[in-house]
Image 1: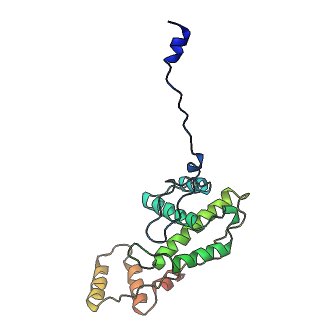
Image 2: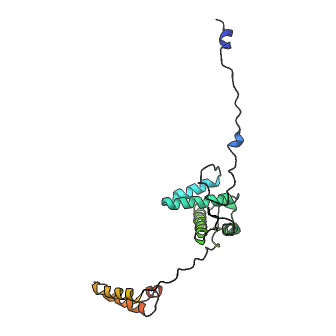
Image 3: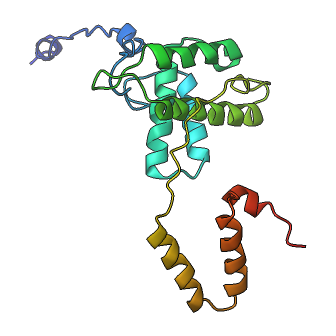
Length: 202
């Protein structure tokens, strides 16, 4: 058998074309309803590296980690700006976006608590970024943005029967009986708990 015969038995060479553009493809735009995708899933954004570092640098409970990831992912989807380019006006615009445009899965506006959670997450992240990477960002852009005011729940007064049980319970107190009786007397004259805490017993 000749060398020519051996070469005839080699399999044909196939040329496979690699489409590199698919590797660098930008993620799809974030929908304005529903939950944002988890950070790191189909997202090749250099900003995410700092988000991951921030989350990993904090000893977060699983639920807190989930909230941080969700809110930072939503912010990244909202803007193409680099961290060094974020200014206070951008945070204010983002807050307006949360208030006016973002809805829940039930097509309802975000609650004030949800908006505060989003802004508080940004405050925590940018506060960390300024401390960890002052060369990237020297001033915290979230400092001037205020949280939504949450009204206090209405006061719930004790019934006469409940007040009677409180006074009766003082008979079973030990070393704190005199102190607790004094507190009850003060409370019964209309002082609020915060005012009592600030009293100087001397």
